[in-house]
Amino acid sequence: MKLDVQRTYNFNAGPSALPLSVLEKAQAELVNFRGTGMSVMELSHRSAAYEEVHNVAKSRLKELLSIPYNYEILFLQGGASLQFSMIPMNFLQSGKKASYVMTGSWSEKAFKEAKLFGEAYQAASSKEDKYRTIPKLSDLIFDQSDAYLHITSNNTIYGTQWKVFPNTENVPLIADMSSDILSRPIDVSKFALIYAGAQKNLGPSGVTVVIIRKELLEQANTNIPTMLKYSTHVNNNSLYNTPPTFGIYMLGEVLGWVQEQGGIQEIAKRNEEKAKLIYDVIDQSNGFYIGHAGTDSRSLMNITFNLQSEELEKKFLSEAKKEGFVGVNGHRSIGGCRASTYNAVPYEACKAFSEFMVQFQKNNG
Image (cartoon, rainbow, N blue to C red):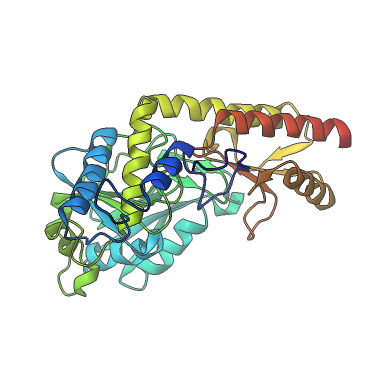
């Protein structure tokens, strides 16, 4: 039996939409995974059947992102939030400082955790502008002796995204790419470490992908708990303890879907087209819709906006829900409206939402 294809328009910020074909394949394989007589959730993580799932996921990610040979790929747990602690625990050495670029709530949380393990400071911040923009590269102030520079590539709450990444020269560049990894081509070699919670573009919640340069691993602190050492997971192919096997299986299938769509170049093209549908309505509304992000910092993944009054916003969100648009409320910390247009959100959903926005303005403008 296939899934009911009468599905909602899912604009949730995370966990978010997954490709329908991936869900249908998972449904078909759920009870008897490829002749094993077991669900993938029942397989031993030491079995050959699961090992293939695990390694295929790594292989697909390596191919899609063109990950160089001198990098390791890890599948961890704890979400990006645990990485906020693991990174300084492993790489903020005594006598060194870590620099953080502040672009929203997630970078604030990462910065707060770093200060628990050593000296950390802000290399730049757009907080005074209510996180409407990404700081200019020329405004970043950091030292070449820093342990690392940390950025958040896309900001789900405020709807901003880095368009060009900083060249940090000898300073390891670390990026939280939870909400835009796999949405556009990136040069992995610019980064010493990339981490991402899966629940936006990679798969269901429960898996965290870490891509780490081997040279950085050699500089890691050693007097830390075994489970919190990156080397532990590198040396055991992310199988030191029981991994989130079903999540990794789903991640591998989502990566396969991206390959079938034509790879990241094609996905990026679609994402630009989807976001343009909604941004065009905002820009052509004569102020009826008020975009939060500056035009040069707009995210292609999270489109944030307000209406002219709180009362009008409530009406907009209520009517949107009745029309089947799910997850368009802004983050609870700032309110407003937000449409998350991740990879698996189809063009048709974005078109329908843009048409709803136009009609709502006609009825209420």
